[in-house]
Each structure stands twice: as C-alpha cells, then as structure tokens.
Amino acid sequence: MHILVTNDDGVQAPGLLALAQAMRPLGKVTVCAPDRNWSASGHVKTLERPIRVTETMLADGTSAFMSDGAPSDCVALPLLGFVEKVDLVVSGINPYSNIGHDVTYSGTVTAAMEAVISGVPGIAFSLASQDRPANTPADYGPAAQIANVIVKKFMDESLAEGVVLNVNIPYLSVETMQGMLITRQGLRVYRDALDKRVDPRGRPYYWIGGEEPTGVNEEGTDVGALASGYVSITPLQLDLTNYKAMDVLRKWKFQK
Image 1: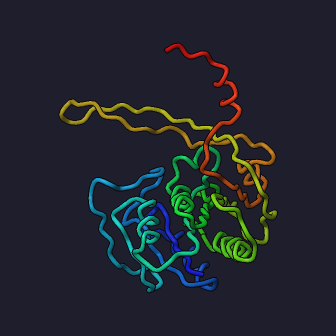
Image 2: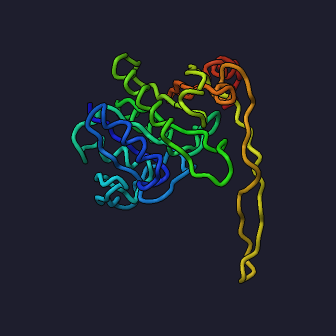
C-alpha cells in the first residue's frame, strides 16, 4: 500500500507530521504538501504557470516534497506520475473541523476529492481543536490514532469508487471519545462580516472577518456527532446534481 499524505496548512504543519507518522505502519508513505498555508482555498488547480517541487525534511527527520502549488496540485502531480503509483491519498490533519458547507472551502477535503477524481481513494481528516483550552498547542496524537484505525479498516474493507470520506475528530482523548458515527453533512452557520478600511494612500480595501462559525446541532449530522463527542465519518460524492430540482425544471416552459 502506497499512501500519499498531503494537507492545506503547509508541509511543516504539525497535523501533517502526525498523520504521516500514523500512516507509516500501514505502508509506504510519500508526503507532498504545499510550501505555505492554503486554508479555505477550495478546489484549485494551477494551469497558467509552472509548478515547482522541492525536497524538504519534516521535523522528525523524514523526507517530504513541497510544492508552490495548491493542495490539489500536491495530489495531482504524484498521481500523474511524479512518484510511483499511489493507492490511497490521506489529507490533514486539519487543525479545525471541516463540517457542513466547509467542504466546499476546505483545501483539506478538496485534496481528497482530487484523488477520487483521478480514481484513487481519498480520505480527509480534521480535528476540532477549536474546542481546546485557550492558549494551548493542539495535540494531534489522538486524532492520528483514529486516522490509523480508519485507514486500517479501509484497507480491510471495500468502498465504492467515487466516494470521499470526510472524517472529523473531536478534541478529546481516544478513551473519552464516544465512538464513531456515519453521518451526513450538517448545516454550518457562518457569521461573516465585511471590514472596510482605507490604506495610507487613501484607497479602500476590505477584510472578510466576523465571529467563529457555528453549526446546527442535529442528530445524524457531522455537527451533531462532534458536539456529542463522536468521530464523524461522512461519505461525500462529487456528483452535486440536485435530482429533485431536475424534475421541477423539466416542467418549466422555456421561450425561444
């Protein structure tokens, strides 16, 4: 099993190192990740300029590749032949949860989607470390243990093609987690605000800010699972078609 490990937080992010270390007992591991933070970048593919890849070293002394491209590029390049054939792509461990509508923004999740587009299974791992005590560094150890368990189970079982697994892990010890739940996407509530400012030359510029997003705590969703102390495993598909809306649209009478 050749496992590609990537992320959207940059090659030196501690969550990436924890995930790579958790994967090494399961097979050969190649790390290819961005050279900088691409959080909330969504699904990006670089086409209008060359992509540079250089070898670097992680904090534990192991080698990795870093690219000046987006997270999706860091998956596309290896799958297109930059390294030998890849059997599985794992992305993360993101420092914050990726639930509900976050999946469309998340470079972590869309990196796993890039794998599935290319016919390779993809799993995204995120840790709800926003729930940790203030001013304390995130501990990725429990999340890495969970990632190991899930990937090991994936290797033992079968999964239909075209499925992306989006895994969100509560910020708890493994012993205090309630278990794992198969969930659907919940409803993310964003509280964005526009901050308009003026630069020293008198020109306006803008920041998108606001309060931390919340979610609707509903049973059976990724939001509800995390709130109850469960690991959330959400199977996603790349077909975004709203089939019920197709039936409605077929009844529309369009005028030429």
